[in-house]
Length: 283
DNA sequence: GTCGATGTTATCAA
DNA sequence: TTTGATAACATCGA
Image (cartoon, rainbow, N blue to C red; front, side):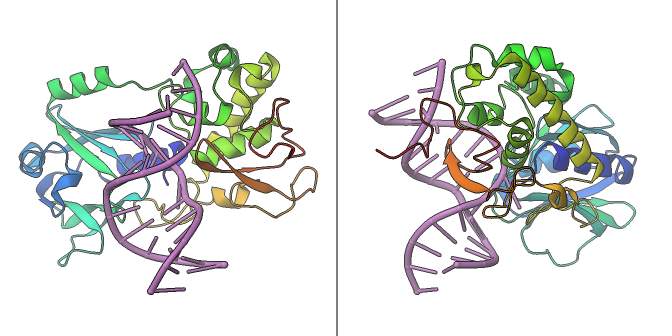
């Protein structure tokens, strides 16, 4: 669920709401989500003050006052919720950070794909230098982005979803960005003209920026720290809109599968590449 | 009740 | 190199 704008919103929420608080106790009720081990996380965080919170791609990085870090990936359905310390464990809550002030930060994940790591400063260094993560979209210029695309022979959508190529994008924002740039998701990356590649990057960045401003897209599970969803889903042009009219040309939007992912597009505004993508002409 | 799909990603096989 | 299938899991809707 959470892609760059949603993760960024959660990070901003964490900055405003939990930085400066001291962790009194950590409770882990589903061991496997703490991949470095529940006991170690509890020891690491006990008595520590949360010093700062950052983001790298879709990873949330919580820095404690001694330089150790808690790294979190929300995967599909992970959430952070801040509220009064629970007495009974709420549904699907697997980790709870109890603060001294009576509130608690809860990690909730229905599908149990998300995870967290508790790392010493040295371990964190090792972890981040071993990360094979592409650049943040905002750190590239349209020109640099276009240069990266050139010479890539895979299809554009799976490439944009590949976190090693560029970090932070997921299914929603890839579909929206490709529509905004008028590019078919199955188009080979190196078949996108430089001009259009640059435009794709610009559109992508303004979509991400607007989405961050609206606190992300809530289509099912995503919510911010206080349990409130985002608003950017109201601005989606194609994602989840199969059968509705294209906002640009009026033709019915379609859904297909590209790289194993549900893909939303306008076949008129995003013309198929010559060779013959998924739903090409039938024999 | 069954089937298929869901925003992520690691892994394995072709 | 790239791709497709599969798995991890719970829930929802058709």
